[in-house]
Length: 179
Image: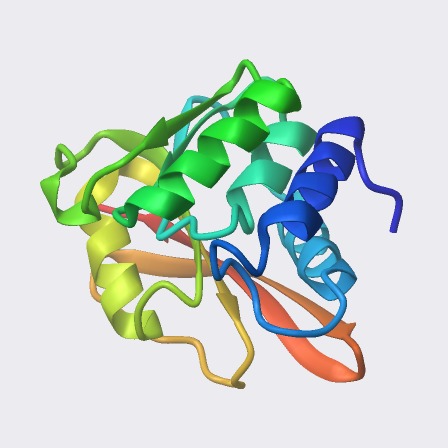
């Protein structure tokens, strides 16, 4: 998959800082970038999006890079990871991305039109938190490896993007907040 210039900058900085900042495990970083890109390509939305537990920037950097009309807040509570994300956003540069160095529980309810997360919390917990942060008709996207889609009252499953990364099944599951 072709990376955007911002994603190429992200990859270069990740390779430079991955070990010193404990950003990703051993092995190639390419699967992380491929996973994030595929997971966000199908999204059609407007407004403010939150990437909960952004960590090394997946999938929030890809979301900002591939959807420049969105405002993307990368939410990360760990200081060294937040500092890394700030470097990426400045170097890329991604003018539509902001780093929020705080816990997601402290964000304002109903703040966002979209919430995305990958390996942030168990899927049901991530969906519950997303529901709290979303405006009505807002979208939550969970990146999942297991073959289960959590259910939650007030959140309607509307899209499942199925793909493989290194021969392993992956999914980006979309939910819409309903009244």
